[in-house]
Image 1 (cartoon, rainbow, N blue to C red):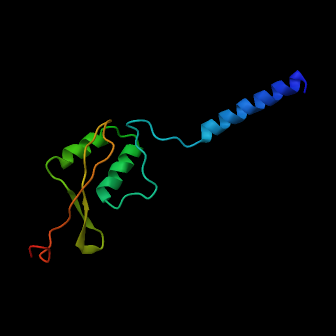
Image 2: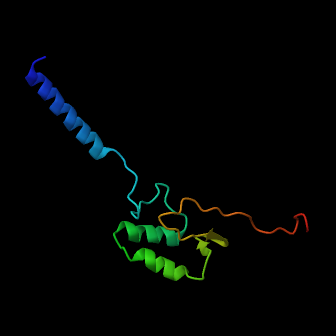
Image 3: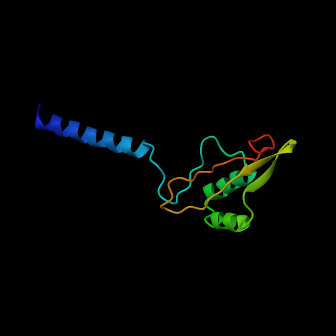
Length: 113
């Protein structure tokens, strides 16, 4: 191969790598919001996602102020007056990796019922 062909091939590879890097999906930066593809069942969480996606940086703090001492988040299910969306929320930080909710509703037919 001549030097010209090697240089052309090298330039092509560098360009190709740059294009792949530009279009490759990457995880969001810390603090950056991305809505899950499946969306939200909770109307309030869907509204929060829309506000954050639109760039409203104050939306997150307003959300936490609204929920102060009012958790879990309980919302009616549209078209079903006998059901509610119940969402347990946890305000983590950069060190939070996982939150578990254990237990369930008590039952009159349980071991002591």
